[in-house]
Length: 273
DNA sequence: CGGTAGACCTGACCGC
DNA sequence: TGCGGTCAGGTCTACC
Image 1 (cartoon, chains in turn purple, brown, blue):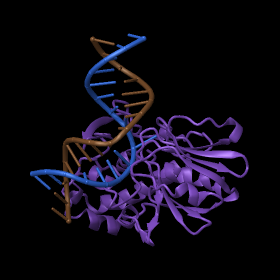
Image 2: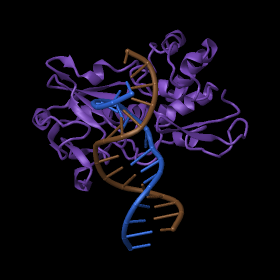
Image 3: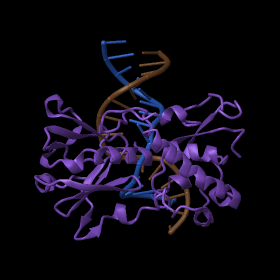
Image 4: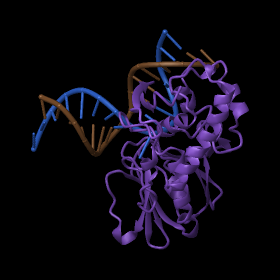
């Protein structure tokens, strides 16, 4: 999926399109993605328009002109496609389709169905996944003192700690590997044993890799595309992710791939301690 | 509570 | 060509 940079790129793409156009009609073509999609969404969207889209970590929140808010999460394989109505062909995994007032169509496509489309609030209370998620890594909430404190007492690996969305929400499998490379910390290091100095390097490393990836339009590995069908190009600048056995860009040592908690991690055994 | 396998779903790719 | 196994950007649940 889309990690934070891809969600942010998608959000910016949607903002170029949605607020200027009314939603003439909405269709739901899947019974459920991650969860059952509320049946009243199409009726509530008809005739409305999106006034703004904000982001909390990997979640987008669509603010509607009728006062309601929609949560949209792209899961592992979700993306939006915008096209002229006459060019639009509904394919197998187009689960959520908006017909817009300028004769264009916006379709949510998600083969693996790990995405999420739901009302953001129920009886004015945030749903659990918005209420309980961790801090946004691009906000000032993420600073060295905070992170050092959070890592105390954690016996898990740095990889698992940074992937824990209840602590920091937005990092995923790619950008954890990349950030740990820039901070010269091995993904296998026990979180509680990471020093204050290392934490002080890790925080700017996380922010830099996310900012750089957003600037590059995200990373396109398999299915990620911007709303206009553009691929991101940050994958060309990966230092370790997906580069098993290839030379480290700093020291030429072959990059190592290991499995942690069932998922791949990549690191340079020479540069990262 | 902290930590970790397993589950959810489809498609692409590799080796035989 | 076809089949089985493996892997993939996320995250929730069950269990220890």
